[in-house]
Length: 486
Ligand code: ADQ
View 1 (spheres, rainbow, N blue to C red):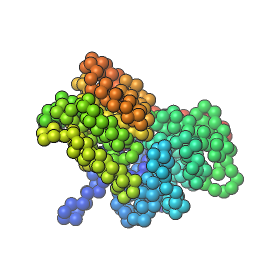
View 2: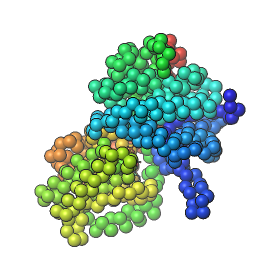
View 3: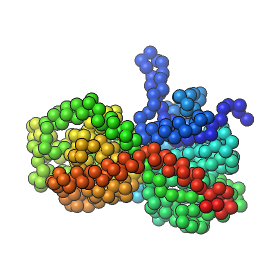
């Protein structure tokens, strides 16, 4: 038994909330990784007097650094070798689970050796959690990379209260059932007391899978698993709550940033450098096949070709963050997108009037806020997306009342943002019409829509999300396995 300090609140996520920077002289420095999760957790962690611990991978393969403190937060790195990174992360997480959980937009790859590695790494995370968790601690596990961790922790430490949040969709059972390890994954998740999903449909899909695959029974938002006397992972009977807790952004922080004179000045600079067009259309995504970038380009390309819009007045800026470049499907997608951009520009741009500006780069928060302010129409057209924070960031940045949001009905955000210009990205004709409507509607109509959208995000920000999740965890059945108390 290790004599190290333990904590009443423990987070486990694939990545630690810090990045290691190596200076030219070889010295290293840890910098807080920007992002909603870090901000949300920061507000939650301030409430834990005894401090909190975060278990995660440090971002580089090989030996893990020793645990260290970042303010009140204890960071506990989990090592991953190059081979493990390739099998557990790029393989099983991003080439099996990611496409399967996103409507099989591309075919998932099933490799037994990848799953074996996923199980090993999940056990490693679970052991690290058990090492740092104090008696009776609350544990919050994040996302699809760590679905076996809840039961692995529970098997060792029944004293802990365990929650898990899924940042991506949970698929309908008809798709989930393809997974050769479907029963193990469900048993892994049922080790938690509370499971949080982005949409009520995701929670329902999970409950249906438990019924169909494990023969569990469900009542309201509770899943009752009678257990199995087979000594395998998560064999004990359990009652677990599964409910929607939609994630959001740090609305006041982002609005403040967007309001700053530096960001305002930068927005003007960007508009000017684009040739001060009448209408700027914007897309901002990780370069991922789930985000519908090809469908968006197809619609915009046709609008230019049809003469409905002209590069003299309208320009489209697509910012695509490099992502998962070692996975084949992502390399193919990049080639396709770059081919489409080249074709559209070759066919319809002319000197001084570029139809599509394409940036395969990552930017800081200030630059993102400035870009949002420049966008007259924001195009968020995923084929499937757990939530989509870009939609929420955009409406928050446009506190001047301007702008218009085109939003795919296949995002979690669409549930909460009914005033957006809703679209089905598979329907190219419909998408073209919706884009034109968002460009041409009266300013008063656009302002009305944006007001409603902004209000929603302001009221339901990332801090409320974290509080809602912890309230759900606290209200989960008190005596797991005995039918629950609520
Ligand atoms: P992602 O798929 O990464 O997240 P999203 O919710 O859109 O998708 O978040 C992307 C974040 O990256 C946003 O904050 C955005 O501003 C930022 N970003 C995008 N392009 C950028 C660029 N070029 N430079 C800098 N920043 C950029 C997963 C799920 C989502 C879910 C989130 C949170 O897939 O559905 O909303 O987790 O739960």
